[in-house]
Length: 357
Image 1 (tube, rainbow, N blue to C red):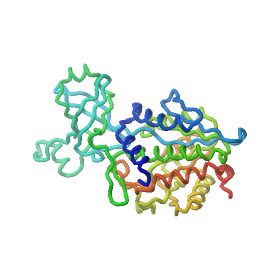
Image 2 (cartoon, rainbow, N blue to C red):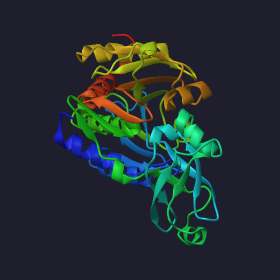
Image 3 (cartoon, helix red, strand yellow):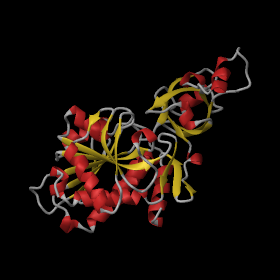
Image 4 (spheres, helix red, strand yellow):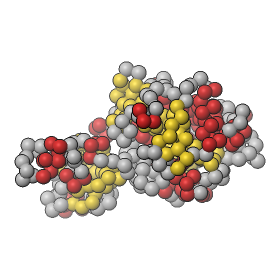
C-alpha cells in the first residue's frame, strides 16, 4: 500500500466481520471514516450506510457510488445432537473457498470459535465424504463445524439455524507479496477503502464538485443486492457506480496491475455505454491503461439496479483481483488508482452523464 494510513485502515477493515445481514463491525469503521469528511452520514432501513457530499450546483444531477459491506460466509442449516454445525453458503462460496480453517460463530450472546472440518481423508468407500475429499469434490454436505460445545450450550449462546459463521479473525490479516497484498475478503474491503479514499479526496476538492455525491456502503450484495436496490429507489440521482473487485482471467483479457478494470457488461446485462466510456476515458486521463472487460461470470450492485430499472444508468469500476472469493490478491497501488479514477470521474459531471469530453 502506497500510504501507511491506508494500510492500517485496510487491516482494520479485513479484521472486521461482515456476513450478509450482520455487517455492523464494518459499518462502524466506515462511519468513523465518513463522518469527518461528509456533510451528512446516516444508515437507512435496509442496513446501508450513506455519506453525502454536497456539490456546488444544487441543480446538477447526483451520483450514487456503491461499495458493498458484506463478505462471503456461511450460515447454520442445522445443529446435530453432538453439537456439530451443518452449514451452507452465504453468498457465492464453496468449501474450497475457505478450506479447513478456524471460524467464528456469531451467536446472539457470544462469538464462539470453531473449526470448519472436511473430516478425514483417510477413509474408504464406507465413508463417502472421505472419497469426496480425495477427489477434490467437496460439497457443503461433506463439511461441518466443530465447536466442542453441546447443542444445549450453543442454544444458550444464541446459536441456531440462521446464525452466521465467518472466517476467524485469526486468519484475516493482510499478507505482503513483493508488490502485492493478499488476504481473504479484499472483496469488498479493498473497494470500500477506495471509496473512503475518494470521499476524503473530494472533501479537499469541493469547489470542483458539481452535483451531490452519495457514497453508499450497501448491505447483502453477495446474496440479493437488496441494499443497493433499496438505495437506488430512495436516494436522488440517475447514475450508480459500483466500486468492485474485478476477476483476473485470460478469458476476460484482464491482468493483475494497478490499471483499473471498467466493466462493459456482466451476467445481469450490459452497463450503460456512455458511463463505461466515461470511466475508461477518465482512467486514461489519470495516466492508467484501463482494462475494458465483459464478464458473464460476474455481477455487481450496479448491474443489479440497472437491470431492475431502479437506476437509469450504471457503471462498474473494479480493482484487478486474483483468486476472487478466495485468498485474494491485488497490487499495492490498485486501491489508490481506483480512488483517483473515481474522483476524476465525479468532478467531471458533463463526462459522467454524457461520456463526452
